[in-house]
Amino acid sequence: MKIPYLAATLLATVALTGPTYATTEKAGASAIVVAAGMPSNEGKVLSTLDAPGYTYMELANTERRFWIAAPTTRIKVGDRVRFEQSLVMKNFNSKTLNRTFDEIIFVNSATVVK
Image 1 (cartoon, helix red, strand yellow):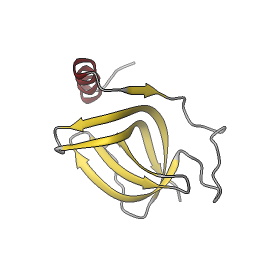
Image 2 (tube, rainbow, N blue to C red):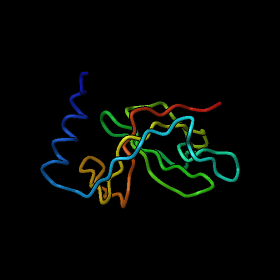
Image 3 (cartoon, helix red, strand yellow):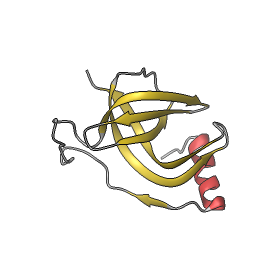
Image 4 (cartoon, rainbow, N blue to C red):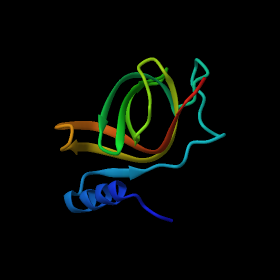
């Protein structure tokens, strides 16, 4: 399996800087469904930030408000996005965006749900 250069760079940065992180199981058919029928691996896009190789998205669902980072994706505010969860990182500092996220989910893919 090939790992894209940016993903490898991110993993190397994580290994060197040592932020707290936890892996999570892939969300799929067994995803927990929230009150309004939106699975926990979906959310409405509130805002986006683009960086080389990644699109950062602030999402909200009936459970919470949270950030994800996906491979570069064409997305707009108001879209409903479903993602495959991969890695949760706490206190992640993006030097490119000059911003620290309290918690962010790095995902393998994010798709617009119609």
